[in-house]
Image 1 (cartoon, one colour):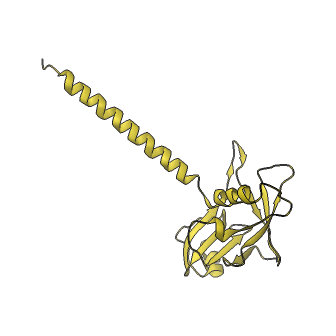
Image 2 (cartoon, helix red, strand yellow):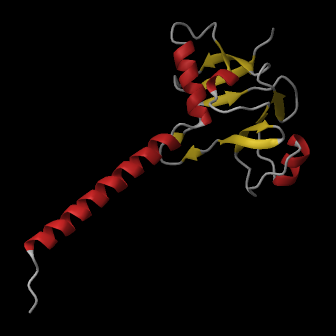
Image 3 (cartoon, one colour):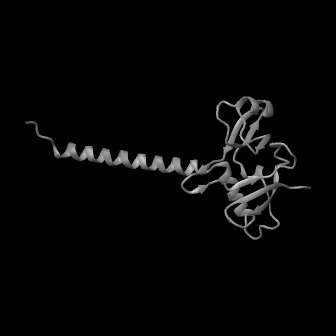
Length: 167
């Protein structure tokens, strides 16, 4: 029978603990960064800019995004890839864009998008609703025109309606 040294066993335990700590840190970091969605960035901007009064509050989307963009499309409903390509001029690299609400382009390339959804156990997780100034199912904005008036929902204080600000 081969004897196992106490030192090799301690080394094994130390390696195991170190690996668990590293995986825990990596998982936490992924969770925190994945929670920093476009929606979350905009909500943080609303909370920061509209803390005093929500009645006369507006938000400039370009100030809240952490990436460069030159076009933003906001959609009421989902579109398939062919419809999206016809609207934005770029073919999405994903097949299912049914829940897409916002697409950001930079130089005719998709640089980011926000996909709304529902958490069936916890209710709706969407905190933003964008209205449209026209009868289309989508609206197009630039960094200069993407300014929205903010209205807080009376029934849900964490739900905001954003309406294009009129100059």
